[in-house]
Image (tube, rainbow, N blue to C red):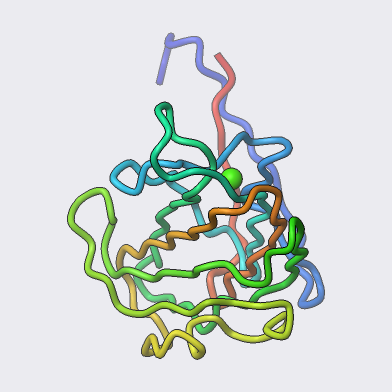
Length: 174
Ligand SMILES: [Ca+2]
C-alpha cells in the first residue's frame, strides 16, 4: 500500500458472553431488502449478532412496501451457527404472527428453501431454526432469512448465535 495514501486502522471489540452485537439496526442502517432476489448482505462479527427491524406492508405495490425483510449471511470457515433466537417481537395493528423463512445459500443466487415458522410473541426467547425444523448447527456457508408480513409496523429482533469469534475489525480511511 506504499504511497497509496490509505491509512489502515484497527478497532478492538471486547467480547462478553452477555453482550450482543447489533449487526443491523433499521433505524440506523436502513430498511432491510424488500426484494427476495436481492437480499441485504450481513456479516457475523461475534457469537451473538442482533438484527433489529420493523416489517409489514403490501407485497404487490410498486415500489414494494415493507412486506419482505430479506438478508443473507455467511458462516465463516471453521465456525458454526447454533441458533437464530427471536430476541424480541412486538405486534401491532391486530396482527398476531409474522413469517420466518430460512434458506441455504444466498436467496438472490438461487438459495434453497429449508423451513419456515409463523412466529408469535409466545416464541420470544425461542430458536426459530428449531421451530422451522431447520437442521442445526449451520455449517460454514451462505444462508438467507426472509421475513414476510402484510400488516405494517411489526417490530422484531433476531439474535444469530454461534461460535464466530470477535476479531480485529480493520477498516481503511482514505
Ligand atoms: Ca423492514
